[in-house]
Length: 264
Image 1 (tube, rainbow, N blue to C red):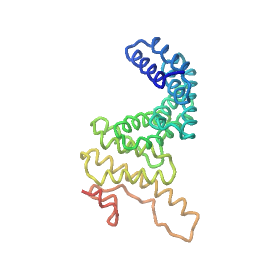
Image 2: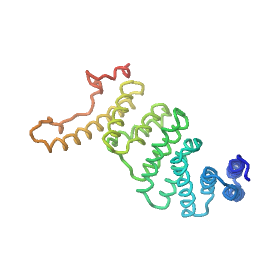
Image 3: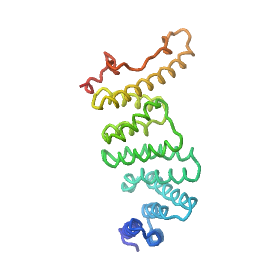
Image 4: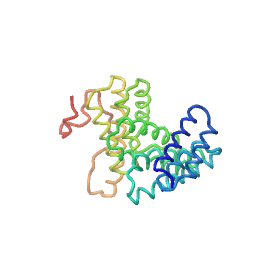
């Protein structure tokens, strides 16, 4: 029988060799971990590491697929809580492999599943920040632009990166990667940006970019509402075509907003 820790130890030894540039040695450790694995969790873990040193893109994709299939099996069974903290990394690795192999649509879906899995980290903000940043870059590479996002939003992200504004960046990246395009997700995205704007914590340049990003998201949502209202001609939704970006002195929540806790 395999000891409870041998597969994890082999993967750790392989990772140490990989980081030291001894890729062939790392591959041998990962292969041994796979051969020694007995449980679904150990097979999942070993497959994930085998993908790291796979000689071809196709082989890497095969290993990542094996890993996520085992992870799904374990999560559905609900008999090993260790899997939940690994899900985002496993899904990101699979998404990256799909993207490398040219399947942008499947990669986008895998990145979005990874974003959903980040919720399972339960407040491990440092881990979430790294994962959200990786997912954001991956989704961008697939051409994913969720409803509510805009040129102003992407300019804001780049400005926050340049200025090392990691706190606000964590907020906007989290909102982006969790925006799957449903009405509820888009509303959450827009509200998150508005709440960040209301804190007034950003420098003037970034605050303006954020204000414009909120305005662009609002206009998109208003346009969608107008298209829905067109099906009911007896109701007058008003003229949304003249919606304007938020003014410098405007409160993006509006005078009657209940979100007073976010105002400074």
